[in-house]
Amino acid sequence: MGLEAWNLPDERVGRPAPDDLAERRKAVAQLPQNPDPAAVVRSRAYGGVACLVVEAPEPDVTVLYLHGGGYRLGEAAGWTEFAARLASAAHARIVLVDYRLAPEAPFPGALRDAAAAYDAAYEAHGPLVVAGDSAGGGLAAALALAARDAGRPAPLGLLLLSPWLDQTFASGAFERNAATDGMFGMDAARVGSEFYLQGHDPHDPLVSPLLGDLAGLPRVQLFAGGHEVLLDDATAFAARAAAAGVTVEAHFVAGMQHVWPTVFPELPESRAALAAMTDFLRGAATASR
Image (cartoon, rainbow, N blue to C red; front, side):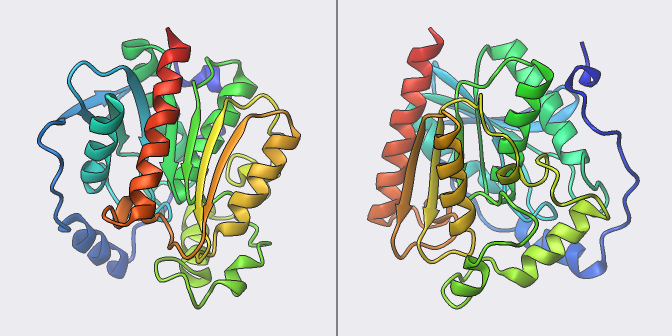
């Protein structure tokens, strides 16, 4: 059974990346990664999608992880250090998905890649958690909604770090926290959204999961920092999911930046977040037995 079982929109033709974006991608790709040597890192394709697998010895749970980058930046290799920390702490296998980027692959390219990788990872490893940060958090939530609507096997849980969940830009935090979020802002979000949507309706729950019916989602763990522009996305999603009958564990941490657990590992708040994620994943592993 292939992607047709997901009932996702058809592929669309994109456009080449501008020169400045191509240069930014090169610069981001050169950022050093120093993963925990206790975790093994290897390349593997799932459903024809290139991935990196970062795993502890004898992992108890598998996580399909969708990286951030505004849908236009980033690659799996840039998340190996964080994935190794999480894999070692939670005795987990982290599958980092190198989904296609915009503007070359507009919506639904990334979502179709995520669905293909999800099916193959599920077949290889059994029930798994879906996770992501920033744009990858929005993609993870969209994947869970698509799985529910298509009758695909549900994830064991949904782990979201500073997720971007609404591309209509209705959130007041874009203005309220503009001066305190040093990593993301309205200008970057609008560019990323335009590259990804390329005319697609931003109210579609598959690009703005906050606007969808959240009933029937798996257990959610969610993190957002008090200084970031996506704070309102996270708080609204937590409230709407809980009202829809979903179990939600939300961590809203004062003074924290966008995706702080992934980029500032030595902070006490990051260590606390890692411990909470570990507990969540261990709970998911227990539930899968």
